[in-house]
Image 1 (cartoon, one colour):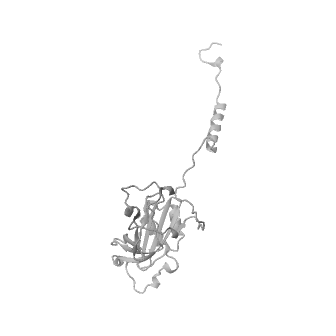
Image 2 (cartoon, one colour):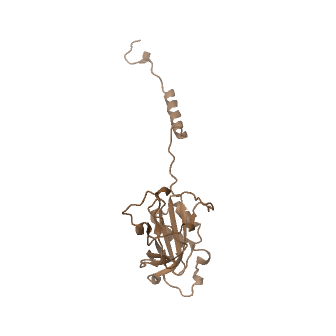
Image 3 (cartoon, rainbow, N blue to C red):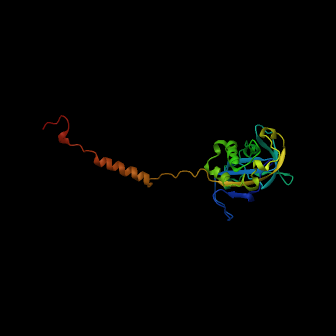
Amino acid sequence: MMVSVGLLAMAGVSWAEDSVPDEKAPAGDTLISYGYDAENHAFIVHTSSTDSAYDCTVPAEVLVGYGSVENGSFVVTSLEEEGVAVEFPERPTEDGAEGVDEDADPAEICQFSGSVVGGPNGQINHGQFMKLFHQIVGKKASGCLNRVIAQSTLGKGDDQVRTSDIEDVIEGDEAEDTFEEGMATFETFVATCDPGKKDKGDDHPSNNKNKNKAEKNKADRPRGNSANAPGRSK
C-alpha cells in the first residue's frame, strides 16, 4: 500500500558514516532528510526511526507547499515531484520494521517542518543552519545528526549570503508569510545514533575483574580460629 502526501526515492539516500557504493548499504537507526529552498531561504528538516512504519525518504528535487510562517517557523503541507504528489511506502517487515499499525498516521510520521534562514540584515551562513537545526529537531539533535548538518554545504558557497551582497536590506520579521511554495533540494542520510551496549556475559573482562577482586578479598579476610572463639576456655 502506498500513502499520498509522502516521500519516495531511496536512490538519493546517503550514509552519514561514509559513502557506500555497494548495493547493500550499512544499517542505521535514524533517517534524516533536510532540504533547502534557496529562493525563499527555507530550511526543511525531518528525522525518523528506520524502524518506523513508513519510509520518509525524499526525492532530490521537490515542490514544497508551506503552511503559514509564524516567528520564522512553518510546517510542510505538500510535496510534489514533477507535478505528482510524492508518496512514501510502508516499510516491509522483512527489512526490520515492526509492521504497520492500522492506526499509524503516515502524514504525522513523515511530517516535515522548518524555518526561514536569515540574520537581521538578511545574511545567511552555515552557523545559522546549525542553530536552526537544533531549534527544529530539539532533543533529537544528537551528535550523530549534528555531524550530518555540520558536514553539509548549507550556508556555504552559493548558499552563503553576506550583508554586502544584499541591495535591499529586509528585516527578518518583514519577510514572514510572503511565500506559499517553492522548489527545494533534499538530501537524505541514515545514521547510527544508538549503537547499543553489548551484553556482559560471564566471560566479559569486567565480570572477570570483579570476580577476581572478590576472590582476593575473600583470601585476605582473617580466617576464624576455634581456639580464639568467645567463651572457649584455654
